[in-house]
Image (tube, rainbow, N blue to C red; front, side):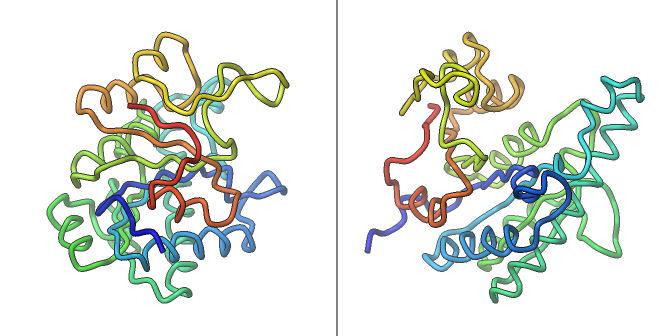
Length: 237
């Protein structure tokens, strides 16, 4: 069996994936499958930090486009990520994986405050750390939060698990002739305006030479394949 090629990763999970085919909320069977995939990766001995989006419950950007105050809608989106974080914590602990949830917004009854050194200590003690509430600031996405947390915990790579199996030159759902990239540079992602992560997150990763691997979360075993360095998805470097 191939050994993992990374010691510490930051896994960014799409909130929309948690909804499954129902399109909204949390689908418990999908959640269980994701937890089993994360657990399989954890059992190889790597250290895992997790950031989850909140798009299955509330999208701040969409609400602000409909006239809601952007700061208020972003805070609501951050609370949605905390609901997902607690759901994933429960699912992981049912797989006997020790976890800690850290929140960028103080909510002492349900999560630890985000403290960088404490997060690193949890990882060193082989606990999975779930980072909730984004960066704690409006106008920043959970992609940016993932980039920031990855650098703060000294992760070797960001693995962005979504509903698509990599990065294409155009939307593969609308264009059957869309071409998939195996590797692409940060500058190409930015100049082509490819919808991988927002430009702030990409720029942060580029400035700090942090690679991003984007792959399909819905294929069972993909997280394990990714940490073993198998050729899946698209690598941005």
